[in-house]
Length: 215
Ligand code: SAH
Image (cartoon, rainbow, N blue to C red):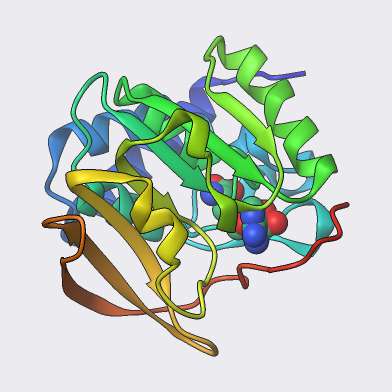
């Protein structure tokens, strides 16, 4: 079922070259992307589109982010081996797998059960073991806090305070913030009460949903 052919590997190498051309310069990030078969996270009908720089539909009307966006967010997060990283929005599990390739200890939360389940099947196939949770990302995972890094992969209407609380001092959160379009923020937690925010351009993500109901 999960086959990574020479053709896929070739397409992936070309995609990595393309990402370099788009300004992704972190060699570890490029290598991580080169190791993750993106087509594993998509319906087989999308196989040939998997290595184009586009967002594609996954289950529950959600999307797998564009490869350049995944690369950009991952580069901004600047993950060192063994760092504890919290990801909000497991989705397909693609970004989660890239973080695992960087040897992060990954915790990921998804609010749609079918996505939570299907991502885990791919993780098993790839023999990686992120810690997967089904629930509301706004709440984070207080019992596992503090995190070295937090990555939000859906559009947050504002910077979620509860998640800043779960970041260690000196830790970094990367989050697309805004309603219709989002500004990519890199937020550094300086002290218990101070943060530093840098902006990195405009993006478009599916919304981060705040609901009591889960699916
Ligand atoms: N990182 C994913 C991106 C998926 S799109 C990937 O690589 O495929 C964003 C995901 O965030 C969607 O799956 C959506 O269901 C999820 N999401 C939205 N609001 C959420 C919330 N409050 N808590 C957890 N996940 C949420």
